[in-house]
Length: 244
Image (cartoon, rainbow, N blue to C red; front, side, top):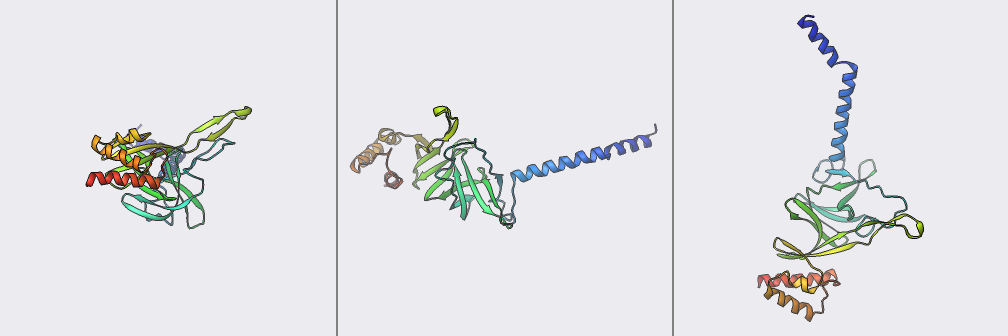
């Protein structure tokens, strides 16, 4: 067979109907994959910082009691900071079981869309009167914490839920636990867990720890049960000790 004939034979094989169909499938698959990871929308599409995530899908077992959210399935108006840009008037909810912030928005066709805001770009968010931040705990690993205080010392609450199988009376139903809170205190770049007054005060140097212990005793504060408002006052006092 001549060189020219061989070339024509290869050309026919490359552009056969089967090969063309395969190439089309590969292109379509790639397009679908990109759409699943980078969603654009007629309303927010000009700002890829906000609309850049995956569609939120979470399928629960049948007869599941409770929900995966911080407080309730109801979406509330809040704000979020993404790569230094603060967005307000967002309809959001916090899935603490999956540790995801969900954005609920309506596109120009009137359809409601749910996407998870990119945890690589999300910095902080607020809703229902609570403030949350994504804080690095080691290397590039980040966790979402509720934050109290704004100085070098802050309280960090890590919220979570468990999904357990309840076989009471032979009925195999799944149930979400109540939201559980892990208490932490951040001093500089150090994050330490605490469970009572003793472990809370031991997070500080002896001199400051003694002053804080006296403050808690004088104001009858139980760090395990105190409200956010009271603990904010406590952490403000702790920061005062650092700057006086």
